[in-house]
Length: 269
Image (cartoon, rainbow, N blue to C red):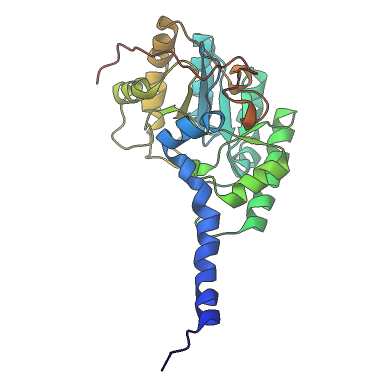
């Protein structure tokens, strides 16, 4: 006797799993190798003679001004991916970022992990962040980097709706760790950095180990010096030659051919 399979019940039970996979699937772009090979524009690959310097999680009324002073001394401008709620709370350092020639970009409204699908929440939060950050900067922001680099389908859609271009990174300093030091941050950046790369650092410990920003601040002069000694200029994403849309990356339309120069650093480790 053949058993009847409860197809409807199985489909109903599988639906939440399918929805969750569709939601989190695009977050596979967090994997550095996959991102560099298949999505160079998303990875932040730009002109081979340039390195984009970016900072996440600010602004912070204590630490961010110290980074601005250090960047002034170095003669470098950068892109700061800021949180909407932090800009609302600390508008003065956000405005000062722009006054000193840096680029404001969107890191979201809060620094949360989007494990469960919530397209409406993603859209509301990102649009609110765009509005607050745009008001602080005096112009509509262009770039978006989700917290933790987790780019879900909902956040892809929200970014598109808000007119933002997602950009992650090609090199980072792991400067959020409690054991980070200036030497470790410098060496970790150097290990993955190439001409045309985008560097991820943090100008605050908002979502990092307390006081970890001090290691980043200490490493910053050497990171910039290493780039310059390798013949690479350092600046914000707006000067990075990544093009206006992900589809142009690597085509040569923005001056990048898909080839990157090797990076050599005297950093230890």
